[in-house]
Amino acid sequence: MSPIKLAIVGVGKIVHDQHLPAIAGNAAYTLLASASRNNAIDGLPSFKTIEEMLAAMPEIEAVSLCMPPQYRYAAAHTALSAGKHVFLEKPPGATLSEVADLEALAAAKGVTLFTSWHSRYAPAVQPAKAYLAQHAPTSMHVIWKEDVRHWHPNQDWIWQAGGLGVFDPGINALSIVTEILPSLIFLTGATLEFPENRDAPIAADLHFRNAQAVPVHAEFDWRQTGKQSWDIIVTTADGEVKLSEGGARLSIAGVEQALAKEAEYPSLYQRFAELVAAGRSDVDVAPLRHVADAFMLGKRKQVVAFHD
Image (tube, rainbow, N blue to C red; front, side, top):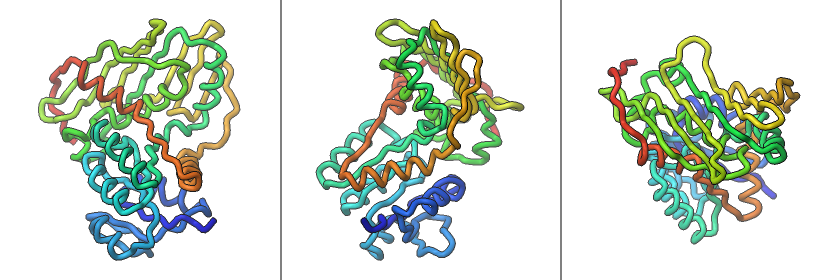
């Protein structure tokens, strides 16, 4: 099978740090072009819009959409309507309704739509999932706290309505939670803290349970200084399961586990290539649904203004 002729739409830091190395390391792809309002990829044709790019290069077969979620639907709709396969960076859209419409369009056009969740491919995730399938969880505590000034400096879009605020990293935690737990959970209560000058939250405290009333407590905060925290701690009758450093490390009953090398984005692109070859889509919105539920059910608390 010849390589998939791929283009990237929305060229920012994550593209240079993660997408380009993953694509370069996978023989299933040939990267042809990029479209971005302000940036380009050295050595490739660049365009300002996806419409301009697809008109100029109809040979493109697939696009990877890496712009902020508020702008992703229009680009995805354009690509799918043109018969192109679509890879969606996380989160897959600004609303659940957008993603449902894109899923229906992809099916109608007979092309692949992939909602990617890179944290699910962290090395600790599948071993933890396998363990919890055999050792029932009795509770879970998620601690996802980082310094927004370090990770998202001067990114105004992330503070706008639809930009998700602290849920931009928090949804990574939810993507792991929904992958490793053996049963579905649902939100029972939440408090969202909004800076008085922002439209998206800077912190969130979430409480979930499943049908068996197993509690899951998640704490997201963008005001963390010093050591950053990306931990998921699960208690079972046979000991504690701890995923730390965003899923890079795993300990079970206090014993550090040997894990494979980190390969989140290479794994995403391998999965996308497999879906395209099989003529299938993979559209999982469980993490985004939990975020939507938090905005629906959560109490809003105003806190001091935030300035970069």
